[in-house]
Amino acid sequence: MKINLIDLIILIDLKKHQIPRNKTWKLLFGILFRIIRIIRLIRIIIMRVYLDYAATTPVASGVFEAMKPFFSDKFGNPMALYGFGAEARGEIEKARAQIADFFDVLHEEIIFTSGATESNNLAIKGIIKGMGPGSMPGMTSFIPHIVTTGYEHHCLLDSVKSLVKSGEVEATFLKPNREGIVEVEKVREAIKPNTVLVSVMYVNNEIGTINPLKEIGETIKKENLRRKEKAGVAKKEPLPIYFHSDITQGVNYLPFSAKEFNVDLFSLSGHKIYGPKGVGVLGVKKGIKIKKIQDGGEQEFNLRAGTHNVTGIVGLGTAIAQLKVPSKKSKVTEKVRDLRDYFWRKLQEEVKNISLNGSFEKRVANNLNVSFKGVEGESLLMLLDMAGIACSTGSACGSASLEPSHVLLAIGLKHPDAHGSLRFSLGEGNTKKEIDYTVAEIKKAVEKLRKIAGKQD
Ligand SMILES: Cc1ncc(COP(=O)(O)O)c(C=O)c1O
View 1 (cartoon, rainbow, N blue to C red):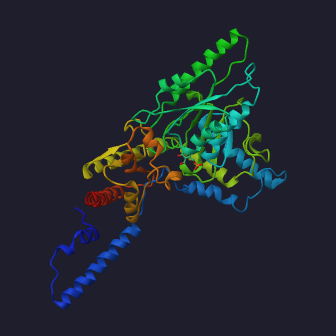
View 2: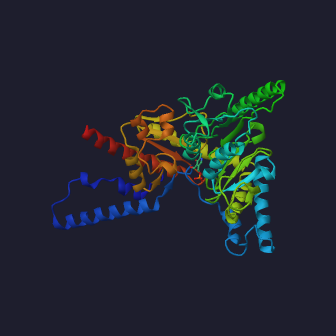
View 3: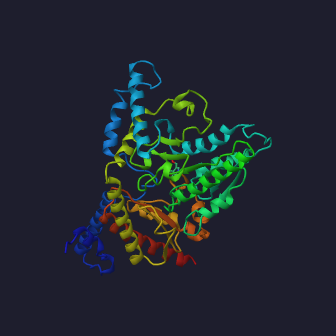
């Protein structure tokens, strides 16, 4: 058996032993205490465990290398007509091709944005504004209807809510079931004659549950066919229903095919897939009319104004291309899933009164979202942070808020359980040693917090 000397020293709780009264021994013990404290501190500094890969990932080394020349040597503005511009333009088109090939869509169906937030805004607002007044023949007071879910990322929820507030749309926010899954039947039932858009995320960013996109796409396709038949009889143009999905948290680990899933629009962000921050994609099926939501230049087929983030786009293209390396994706998924499962088993063994939020089976490989009974999530997060462990209480953008997660409330958790939850999201860099250390620190922190809470009762 391998004995870790530092662990052994740290485990010895000298305070429990009687400290000798003799002056010299007292001095020696005093020095020893101090050494132990320093060792503990060093260990915390050395031991940094990142378990928040759903918030962001580091840029992969190959991606960084590909990006480097575009910070300095190849700095041209892609809209410029001279050689420097053409060089940058060429790289953007290369990245567009890499991404289009990965998702099996046409090159012109890939629109570069600043991230999934912008992609979601553009998808929702762009579709509605693109319809424009009078776009529905014979319907003068037409108010379009959107079907989405109550546990989407805030950037999508708020895009829909702002259109509702301005009176441009009406919306249905579907409740996921207790397992954190949006049921196909619920989507079908929510579709009304004025429904023009259904938006359901692929993987929930907090609880990692996977929605049945293919089945939802099938339902929408059937509804569109039914509308077509009906309109044909009346010799009118049918009102289409578009299907949008925020696939941000699914790209790393799950297959996605816009064609196979009947998805018309999809959003993603570079920094969730070992690419850079500040760049993303909105996939828009050819022929779908969307209106740009930002005035300015005519970049990106006149759908997204603003100078291209060439460096970011090159990075995103490379990150996607790396996901395509044969079998890499499945190997990484398997490794991360095994580690995540080990983490959950160990946590259940070591810490009492915990529960998993969301389905275990229909869950992305890297996610654990756990409720710790009688514990404040924020306090636990702070103690873990002091031990060098990074995790999250909700989505990264919402983690500064002390409101309970809208996702956990949407799946039926009571406020105290939602408050006592943490999300751990693993990545390619995590090791078994890190998980063992994390479980031990969670155990210590939970015991401490429960003791304090017990004293306060
Ligand atoms: C599902 C989902 N959608 C959208 C976003 C927003 O991405 P970004 O902040 O990169 O724009 C995130 C980020 O956490 C996300 O997880």
